[in-house]
Image 1 (tube, rainbow over the protein chains, first blue to last red):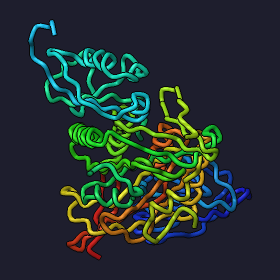
Image 2 (cartoon, rainbow over the protein chains, first blue to last red):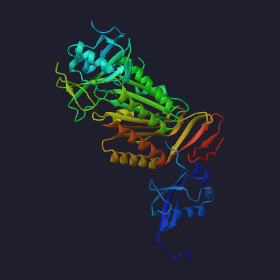
Image 3 (cartoon, chains in turn orange, red, blue, purple):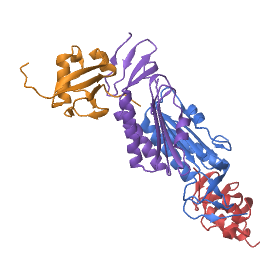
Image 4 (cartoon, one colour):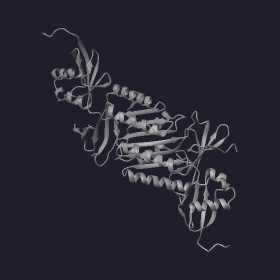
Length: 89
Length: 89
Length: 145
Length: 145
C-alpha cells in the first residue's frame, strides 16, 4: 500500500431490520484508518461491501448503543449500528 | 297567618357527609313560598330547623342532581342538596 | 350503579371495556389512597357520595369527553365505602386512535371528577381518629367517636 | 432483559411495581397494535429491536424521568416478536404523589420511546403481505415472501 502508516481501528458494524435486508447482512467487521467519523465509515462500507449501496447515504446511526450524529468520531473497538426509521412504542 | 296567599312549593332537602353531622339530619322536607332561590331556602332552613345554624351561610348546593349557584330558582318538587367541600377522586 | 362501586376497582376490566381495534393508545389513571409521611398514618378512607348525583355527574363527564374527543372510548369508576391505603379510589381508562388524545381526555376526566363529583372522604387513622377531608385545606376532626 | 419482553405485557404487574404508600396518582399508557379502517387488515406486528441499545435507551429514559420528577416511580416494558392486533406493544406506569406529575412523566416516557427506541415493526396482513413500518410515512413492501 502506498498509504502512510497510521492508526487503524477495527469497528463492528451492525445493520437492523430493513437495512439488514437491503445490505444482505446484519453485521460485519471493518478496518478503518483513524481518525474517522461515522460518515467516513459509511463511505468505506459502501466501497468495500457490495449491496450496501442500497442503504441511504445518511442513515440514523448509533455508536456503542447511543444515537450519534454522522460527524461523531469512531474509535477502535467501537460498535457502529445503522438504524432504519424508528418505529417503537 | 297574615301572609298573602301565594304559591307554596315542597322541596326535599338533603345534607351530606359533614353537613349531615352538623345539621343532625341527612334529609327533610320543607315548604317554601314561591318564587324562591336556593339562598331563600337556606334562610328558611336556618329559621325552621334548629341545629342547621352550624352550616355555612353559603354552602355548595345541588338542585335536582346538578351543581347550582345560590341564586338559582327553586320549584315545587325539587331536590335541593347541600354539599361539603368535594373530595372525590 | 354504573360508575360507583363498593368492590375493588379492576383496571384490567376498564382497559378491556375501552379496547377497540382502531384505538392504538390507551391512557389510564388510578387514584390511590395515600399514606405518605405527611398523611399521619392513614389506614383507610371511607368514601361516601350523593349517589344519584355522582352517577349523573359521571355520566355528564363521560358525555362531555366523548363530545370533545369523538373517537375516544371512555370508562370510569369511583369506589365507595372503606378503601384501604394503596387501594384505588378512582380508575379511568381512555382509548383513542392516537395517544395525545388519550392523555388529554383521561386528564380531562380526572380533573372534572375532582372538581365536580359529590363524593366525600373521611380519613381513618391508626390512632382511632377520623377526619373529614377538605381539599381546600381545612380538615375537621370528627373522632375518636 | 429488563425492559424488553417477548411475553404479553401485564399492566397489573407494572402498576404493582410502581405502587407506593406516598404515591396517590398513577398514570399508565398502553400502546396497542391497531387494526383500524385505514390499517389495511393488519393481523399482527412483528417487533424487532437492537436489543442491547433498546435496553440501554430505556434505562436512560427511566433515569431522565426520575431526574425530572424525583418522586416518580417508573416502570416500562416493550414487547418484541409477534404481537397480535389489540395486544399491547408498550406499557408504561408512573406513580407520583400528585397526579399532574404522573401524567407529565408518563407522557415523557412514551414520547421518548417513540423518538429514541431502536425498535422496528413489520406489519403482517391477512393477505400475506408484510410491510416495514416507517412512521415518517414511507412504507416499504417486503412481501409476500
